[in-house]
Image (cartoon, rainbow, N blue to C red):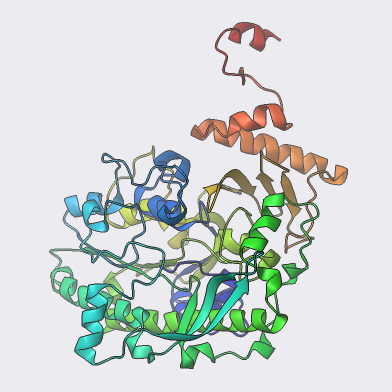
Length: 488
């Protein structure tokens, strides 16, 4: 698993420059999902969904600790999780790397064998990493060539990239790959005998910003070869005002075009460096004789803007840049293929259970992808529903995304509606366009009913604010005049 990873950096998804040979090979030997989405584009809620099979509004862990504004900080004590279920049924369960699913409770509290790496970033001061460096005679973490914007008050902005003064073999990513391989090696004996199967999560903090990489990858790609995203033409004229505010937070307009190109080039270098480490892990599966008996999944918790829509990081803008990610699943004996179903990171928990022969609770918001991976064509939803609850500040959003149209409901300002065929960069908000009234009304009603059906009370905002179609219930929640409301 990666963090904040743009799908268009992957060769198998069409990147013409950024090189990801190991993930490309994984995709070529398995199923690559063309329409793979995150349930929410922020680390902690997305990762909580990965391990619980619950949509964020249901598990209620809605924000990263570092920017929490009053939501709960940990999953409830009685929350069902995938690793606890698998461990209870004979599996070794291990997690290497980023956890970031709550503040007090660690991966070990949910059935994982794991060193605790709690936050959003590489824990370069972690005792285990420092021990690993010392044992190998590697130099300590040190950076130079920082890239930052400038805040409106003239102060330096967020660190966005830097040159790492370490060789590749000393990077935190190399350390994580080493620890993953060591764990697989220990688990391989039990797996090979058929006595103890395993579930291992190798969780990288990159290519999340700041992009801190050594010379080889900091300078791997020429900024002159970088084309800025077409959506840097964003003027925010018909968009929710929070987007322009967020652009100021990331100081996009204070960077020169040259700096923006270099920033993207370094991001690509980071992606290629991580792909190298994934290649080492996949090679270890081969060397341990596990490839023919081990399913491998790849995804990210969400994407990254890298200048798209004059934004960085992720946040209160439900563009495909951060909601559509890479999704690959290789299962021994299943065909190599590319599939177009609208699927989600949220579908992995049910898939993990299916692979393990465990039943899936119909109450969770997850559906096994194995029938698709086997080459079957089950009836599948033609849209995906995503949600957002805030990052840096609270803001509620819901999105319904289909093959052509995308609807985003923003109760505090203005809704958004995009024709993705005519406007794949989502630059023109056509929510008020009378030419699209029919599909817009259809998606509003569809989203409303989906929210009601799943128990997401966000639909109450829509009852009085949007044309959601005929109501067969009292949306006021008064509880005093339901019969006359229905009669009316």
